[in-house]
Length: 132
Ligand code: HEC
Image 1 (cartoon, rainbow, N blue to C red):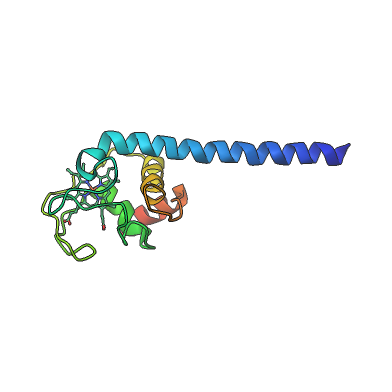
Image 2: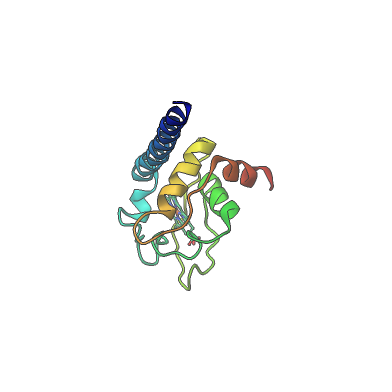
């Protein structure tokens, strides 16, 4: 009896975790559509010479999570080559985004289109914003 209850509990907990995870990506997508799509486009392809692509970008799927977090928060206009190309538009900062929002939108871009990288956790965002 206790065994059965435990199994039910496990299935229930795993199920809720899956729903919560999916919910993060739904929120991330919404945020992407309101804040990022105008420049990076619905397919993440960006605009040649203007806005960097997020789909297939080695930085977006790479391990420098802190850099990605700071780009979302502070904007970006380094004008250095990204995978060999330059983009002359200026990415606007998002100082009002909550840490959870940053985790959600980064999780969305790292798992969308052809990107198959890990999702970003709240703890990773907090760690990135702490060290300057
Ligand atoms: C006003 C246009 C604009 C908006 C809005 C915008 N970006 Fe950007 N983004 C850019 C440009 C332009 C660059 C490259 C700038 C450069 O090379 O100096 C960039 C670069 C990036 C990079 C770095 C890419 C790489 O390969 O290193 C990431 C990640 C990124 N943007 C994500 C986002 C996300 C997520 C959002 C929404 C929260 C967003 N951007 C909103 C224009 C924009």
